Image 1 (cartoon, rainbow, N blue to C red):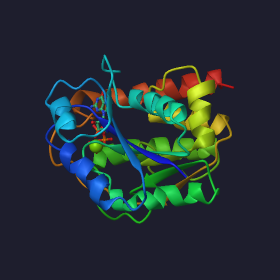
Image 2 (image 1 turned 180 degrees about the horizontal axis):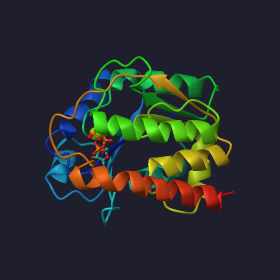
Image 3 (image 1 turned 135 degrees about the vertical axis):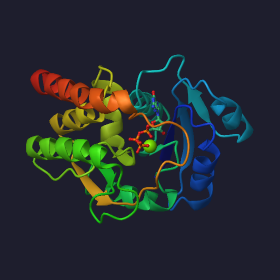
Image 4 (image 1 turned 180 degrees about the vertical axis):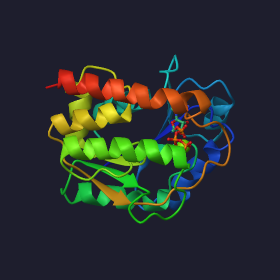
Length: 234
Ligand SMILES: Nc1nc2c(ncn2[C@@H]2O[C@H](COP(=O)(O)OP(=O)(O)OP(=O)(O)O)[C@@H](O)[C@H]2O)c(=O)[nH]1
Ligand SMILES: [Mg+2]
């Protein structure tokens, strides 16, 4: 079974080494590593060259972290991987917990696994305002998707070949938000589950959820959710 771990990076030059070294040293699975850089403007590329890690660089920034996922599906499909694991470049996810998101896929239980920090409620739980947003969209998706979703924006995920091939070959649109991704997966009949993991607080760099985005994101997510609900992709 060939597993690819994609590390999503945008201006994480100060911490990307720590993230990569965590996977190299502490991964609880055997995995190849690919960093997808979303057109960073900091020292990230110099770091990636120095660390001798495989990477792809987007020629333009996709305007948000979800844009990396489409590239990752295409890469994983083209290179024949059985499982694609996704981690954030800011070292918030733990490589020692990769087995937790891979196991339900390796045992053919589900197609997609999301690492959730809100099941055992251990480790970094994010800010109060952010939790309200995450819980609201998780509840909405649980209602539509008819299964419990607990940490809908979590970037710590694993996808099997069925999911990889669906997004690489069939789903022609861009992926704009994680909420849209979840709904599309539900419509595509991809079975998912959440498993408990722990996350670390962001040590350095800038979060995607800055002051402006904290207000913009709920609307943006709601629009992309309703748009997907109406279109219902095949
Ligand atoms: N801000 C931003 N991040 C991106 C982009 N593309 C990829 N990323 C990466 O996406 C990952 C998740 O973004 P974060 O801003 O950490 O989002 P988050 O983890 O949900 O939020 P925090 O808990 O505040 O860190 C990080 O590893 C980023 O480096 C982009 O276009 N903008
Ligand atoms: Mg983060």
